[in-house]
Image (cartoon, rainbow, N blue to C red; front, side):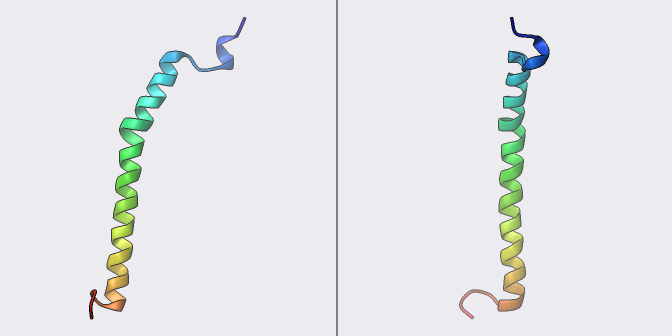
Length: 52
């Protein structure tokens, strides 16, 4: 018989899944998009706007 300390319960797995999908995925998406926008902004400060 499997001991409870060996693995996660279904409730713990569900809570972890919901945290990853509802919290971490959107947060990471915002951080990645904001970081890219910041990098483009810094690049354009030195290289000038597009087409110049």
